Amino acid sequence: MDFENYSAIDLALDEGFKQWVQSPTPEATLFWTQFLQQHPHQEEAVLEARLLVEQLSVASEVASPERLELLWGRIQTELQTTVATKRNSTPDVMLLKSTWFMPIRRAAIWVGLLLGGGGLAYYHFGYAPTIQYETAYGETKTLTLPDGSVVTLNGHSKLTLQADWTGQPTRDVWLAGEAFFAVKKQKSNGGQPVKFRVLTPGMRIDVLGTRFNVNSRRRETVVALEEGQIQVWSESTAHQSTAKHPVALMQPGDVLSYSEASQHLVNQQANLTTLASWRDKRLIFNDTPIGEIVQALSDSYGIEVEYQRQGIANKRFSGSVQTDSVAVFFKKLEKIYGVTVLQTANRFIIR
Amino acid sequence: MNSSLTSTDTDLWNAFRQGDDGAYESIYREFSPVLYSYGYQLCRDSSQTEDCMHDLFVYLYQHRNTLNETNSIKYYLYRCLRRRISEKAQAASRWVSDEDPLTAEKFEPTTPPEIDFMQEQTACEVKQKLDYLLGKLPKRQREALHLLYFQELSYPEIAQIMGLEVKSVYNLTYNSLTSLRDHIRQSNLQFFDFALVVFFGLLLH
Image (cartoon, rainbow over all chains, first blue to last red; front, side, top):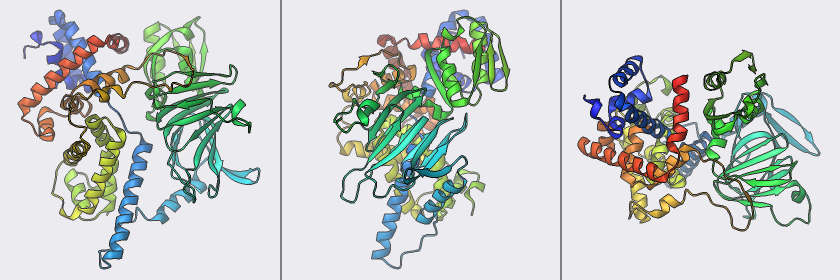
């Protein structure tokens, strides 16, 4: 191969080059390092090709587990309905051996959650019995609510809801921490849509059926809307009977934050992928102060950081942090900023 | 019958065709994530992708006795989904032009006009920018790049799925990558600035 005359495009399209970028082997790395030593004029082309391959390899819409779970539910429902119709019309139709779409199994899963859900509490809140789900630092949990909506709880978070939603005018959940919601539309007996409401300190989010992320920590709430439409009420308006208008109507792609201290709503827009990336066990940052990153790690994963180097918290970092191996992130800081990081269990000292 | 014990695609597929519901569920669990990503790149519409996947899986289940054999479930499903999405799009006559300006525009963030937010400019992610630029490419170019890099397929495999000669796939990907690179350069998106930071971070690491 005369790679020395290849353009960046040629390189990026080369099967061997692509494989080296996507899953490097020591041999391939050696080959390309030597190649660059012998042909330094190709450095720019190799770099550009590498970036193209790297970025294109991750550039795609990825379905969340909740989304695929909801779709699986839809498929099962459809098959169930078709089977029922067939049974009625042709009684001699072969009986299905399947068990996975039996309603009883669904009930079993639900009971399983209630009994063995770990960290699950059952107590009385006013007169209505409520259920509570809680996660430890670094733990995420995906839950199916009584209406079929799916919630993924991030670490160190708590979701509380009424045990029985039948006959309730609204479906209410209380959130402390962070969660991603995929809410199913629901209608009352009268055919009216039943609202789903998320309550956090200082804020209320009203939805019909949609997908969104809520982060409520340290008396500040950030809502990121992926799909559908939601209304946001601040505490000052939400609990007054006179209030008729929400403080904001959100459209897909909007990211809105509300802090109790400033009583101020800010529309940040369009880094929703970043905000909901915790579900894939990684956090994405783009030119973010290290102090903010550390805060996020301490909120959900219980990481403690002590700064013994002046100004390091204000330095910035771009890239992703694997939440199940945060030590790697601190290693990167060592390389980039020449600091030393000492680790004891969940505590990191930057000096 | 435990489908998790069956190792190859052929076995899993045959178990499903013979009525093993566990195999059916395994197929969904294993392939729905990549299938979704592929479908999305074809039509750039999440609910349309979901509808087509829904119809596809219902169809497979109902016709499992008469389905053909396959030694690669993935290609089988890709080809089926590709056909469904293109049929649906043709029916909705939205497939008319490859370069439908709406496709590119719908990724712009929107703010409801009636609310006076304090605008705060935040840096967009490279991934989203690239996604936006990919949306500007003709459908087949986008599809080829997606299969080559995201799905990590080889040229012969892509040829099989898209129903093209291998040589045409080379040409198609060459043109796609060239126009994408031009888009990146024109868009002045700091794509390379950000990526450089990450790249040098990795080098140092």
